[in-house]
Amino acid sequence: MPAIVVVGGQWGDEGKGRIVDHLAKQAQVVVRYSGGNNAGHTVINDGGTFDLHLVPAGIFYPSVRSVIGNGVVVDPESLLQEMQMLEDRGVSLEGLVISDRAHLVMPYHKTLDRLQEQSWGDWSIGSTMRGIGPAYTDKAARLGIRMAELLDEEAFRDRLAFVLAEKNRLLTQMYGEAPLDFEEVFSRYWSLGQRLARYIKPTERLVQEAAAAQRTIVLEGAQGTLLDPDYGTYPYVTSSHPTAGGAATGSGLAPTQIDRVMGVFKAYCTRVGDGPLPTELHNEIGERLRTLAHEYGVTTGRPRRCGWFDGVIGRYSVQINGMTAVALTRLDILDTFSEIGIGVAYELDGQRLDYPPSNVAEMERCRPIYETAPGWLTPITACRRFEDLPPAAQQYVTRLEQVLGCPVALISVGPQREEIIVRQAVL
Ligand code: IMP
Image (cartoon, rainbow, N blue to C red; front, side):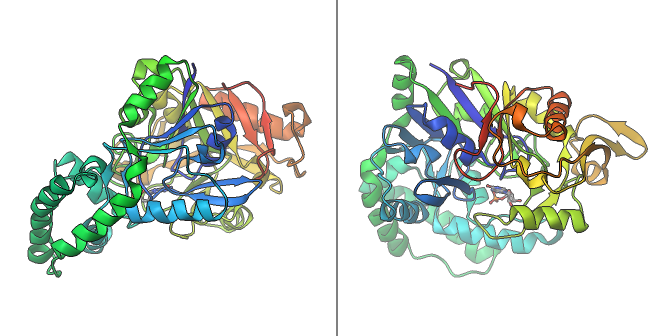
């Protein structure tokens, strides 16, 4: 029945949407398990380029059930906009299902995200301002509102009255903002809920039934391992678990039912938002990577910080997630570089480190120790087999496998669906 997690190995934006799209054609169920509409997954197919934020990348295959799992926080307005965009472009939403346990992103979450970022000054984290942190805060604080309540008028009214009174105290007394009007929030969200009602279901049951029937299940991660609140560069992280552990709690599948973990890594490194990025290149090479790869956030349009592949966090990611295979994306972006750096260790205050320190102040002081690999200076987008790649590109991939301690099964060599090298069957 294979169940496979697709997890970001770096700081997000590794190209997970594209890899999920590749695997979904062999799957019956795709479950998004964490994050919210802070994520941006780009899928390019016959219908053009699609930027997804909440809808799983399985949606393009009509026979796939595309599940927004309980680990996701859902901004219903943003989800409906995305659904409308898909329908307008001829994509059927028949396969879409939303967990009734998923938490809602409410208007005060977005307001609080902005107010917090403004008041935190030097400690602001560069949030996408989609209200994701405050929504997960409320989930953990037992102050959240879930999809299930959105379907029950009385329960929703009662719950919102209690929660909004708390939030209005925070908004007015701590931040000096105007309070939100109960009737306005209630009627807006109730009508959004009515439009979503037919998609809202107990999805853990659907997922368990699929597992019992030996179906192939793809668990779609959002963000990346280094944005995980436990294993990432805390506090410069997101608020749910992008790591493979989060795939079980966020989807309804048990850890023992997951048998494969595919880590997705870009052939170089990027990060959007604040926090350490040891291999960041503040020079013409970083600029060139950004321009060649158009490294701007799908969700916010912010320029991404760019640098060489970081093998230290890569190896750590492989271990933390128990990766069984790696998908290496955007290898073609390196086509025109005569020399390519690979970060193989860090130097921290004169000591060599093989793992990322947990203290963020130390992580900020880490300097990468590089190996230099020769470039291939040839376009590789037409290659479909590993043996078709120029020798220097093959050597680069083989060296990354050694550094990561995990086989590279898929290599993307261009943005189109078919521009991928399958070295090893994944499903
Ligand atoms: P938040 O989760 O929107 O509050 O953002 C927290 C941090 O995670 C910020 O640095 C964001 O830029 C980053 N982040 C959140 N979602 C993504 C993503 O999908 N890709 C890359 N970075 C992300």
